[in-house]
Structure formats: C-alpha cells, structure tokens
Image 1 (cartoon, rainbow, N blue to C red):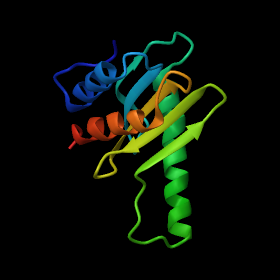
Image 2: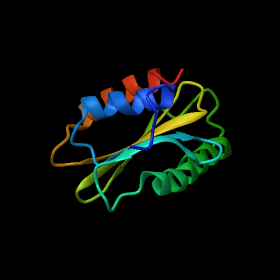
Image 3: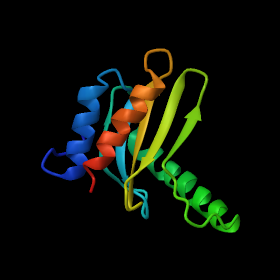
Image 4: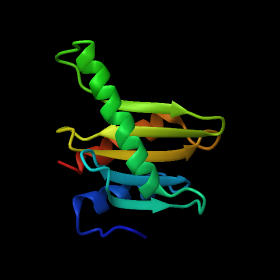
Length: 126
C-alpha cells in the first residue's frame, strides 16, 4: 500500500479501491511532475508509479495539441486508452493539477461504472 488515507490523494485511492475491488492499478498523480501522490496495484507486473510518469506525458501532449488547435474554453475531462484486455483511464482534477490513473480489466469492469468511480474520486482531490 503506497498511500496514506490522511491525505486527499490517499482518500481518493481508498474510495476507488472500495468501489472497484477488482481494479488492476490506480494512482493519483501530480500532473506537473509526474510523481504519484498515492498508488495501489493488484497486479505485480503493473507499477502505477512508472505508469504515472509516462501518462503525465500523455496529458501534457494532449494539452499541447489542444493549444495548437486553439481549442479555447475546452478542458480535458478524461482520457481513455483501450488495450486488448485492459482499459486505462485518466481523469483530471477540476483544477487540472492532479489526475487519477486507473487500470481495469475490460472483461470485468463496466466502462460507465469506472468513469463514475473516477469522477467521484476526482471530487475528493479538491
């Protein structure tokens, strides 16, 4: 367990684990540095801290693309990456300073439920 429930990031991770006990991994990430503020993995092969750093680049590149396209007034709500057997979701906090990275098995988890759980988790990061 790489989190403390005394922090908003740790509380968010705990709530997500409670709502999706079969998740593969979850991390609350500082969007600027890429450092995981809290994380948990149920899969020994999936390191959420490493994934956090790489997915920070995904968020930053999308923000750059939006700026290049002059998409003013728009903000990233979430990012979904669909793999063969997994769903990788990124949900930004309201202020965009943090994001939640979630990995679930696509066969075991309903996408709509995963998105709702992430929305609720992001609200705890305010």
